[in-house]
Every structure is written in structure tokens, then in C-alpha cells.
Image (cartoon, rainbow, N blue to C red; front, side, top):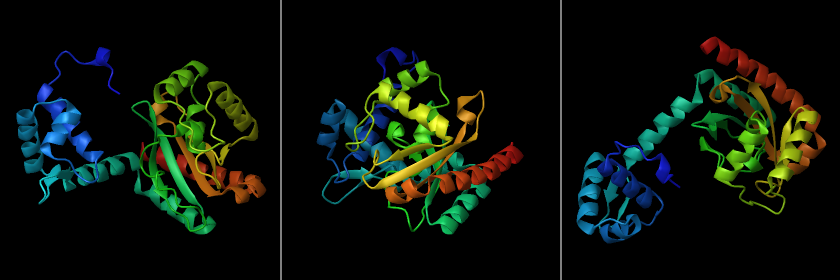
Amino acid sequence: MRDPLAEPSDLIRSVSRALRVLEAVGRAPRGLTVKQIARRCELTVATTYHLVRTLAYEGYVIRREDGTYIVGLEVADRYRELVAAFRGPPSIGEALRRAAIETGYSHFVGRFVGGRVAITAAAEGPRSPYLEDLMPGYDEGAHATALGKALLATLTADQRFRYLKEWGMRQFTQQTLTTPEAFEADLAAGDRRGMQVEMNQYRQGVGCAAVMVTQDKDMERRVALACAMPVAELMTSARVVRTRLMTLAKGLAETIAADV
């Protein structure tokens, strides 16, 4: 949701409208006609037609034979570039892949990007349940993931409250924490444990654990490490998981420091 009060005085309307068109098309995997796009974006059909033709020329949307438009391949290229920028040194990805092979668990690295929790690198493990939403990009359920908890725990209570108010506390399962008070208590327990965890809060049957890799005054330089596994395995081997995560986190911290 865009904040009208934050609108820049030099906003270029045509660019803003083109992005709204691209967003509308992206939210409709079956495609939209020009009239449908115009309706959803509250634009005239004539204006929408010109915007869509420009986006199609640049490769950001594709016109299908039935006259509908879908997202173009240029968007995928920009996404790959974004992921590459997020990921950091290639050695981070290599370290995650090694950990995923050795443990069988999927591993993730995340940090704040633009003030939001984001997953910046991931490696899938064969023993972890597949989580299609946990891929590089913004973490829409930061309050329900161990990675998000680890990063949010580095904020002040006021900063966390504002974050949760802005991005919400969507209920993914019956165990998802949906109040700031419950969330604060959970983070405190994680601090005492030396590792943030979630069990059945993001997906039923899935458990995640996370530790910090680097802590910095600049929130966007803070990095967290997490792994996912069947919840039963986390319940029986939490100490082993924490030891492995701490060891890997130390190595990643050294890698990040060497790259600065």
C-alpha cells in the first residue's frame, strides 16, 4: 500500500502508471486484457493501451494470441539481477550448499533491505519440507519465520511494533503468533535459548531455527542464518542444530568481513 503522504513532489506520473500496470499483470497469471488492466489500475483504456505497448516493446509484458497480457521475460532478468545483488559473495552460496548437503536441511541467509526482512540466499536440503515461499526476496511472514525473528529481535521494541503494525501479522497456521505481546515473549525466549525458533508457525509440520551472523549499528548490515527441517527433528536435536548454525555463522561472518 502506497502512502499518499510520502509521494514525491517530482513524481513522474507515466512511470508510476506503467509500474501499476506491470503490478496488475503480475498478479494475474492467466493474463489480462487492456480493458481489464485499465479497470484495475483506474486508468483510461487509451492511456493503458499506450503503457502496455511500451512495456511490451521493452519486454516487460507479453501479448498472447487471445489478446491478454502476461509478465515478460525482462522481469525475470531483473529478478535474477536483484537476487545476485542480495546474495553477496559467491562463497556465501557455496557455504549454504555445503551445509544443505551435509545436514540435509535447507539453509537461508537474510537481512534487512529497505527496512524490510528479506531472504537473500537459499540452498535446499533433501530432508527439509519444500517451502515455495522461502526463496530470495522479501519475507512476507517475518513474524512467523525464525529468520525473521532473529532479525526483528535486533530492533528496539518500538521499532518492532512499528514494523509489525506496517506489515501485519498474518496467521499462517493455528500456531502463528498474531499479537505483538506474544511475539515479544517468543523473542525473549529465543534470546535465552541463544537461537530463535518457530515450530508449526509458518507451515504445519515445519520447524526453523536461526542465529545472527553479524550485528551492526546499521540495520541493513545485519545478517541472519536459518535452517528448516521437519518439526519433530528440531524438537529432538535443537542443541545440535544450534551448534551447527553457530559454527556456520562464524564462517559466514568471516567471509562477509573479508569482502568489505
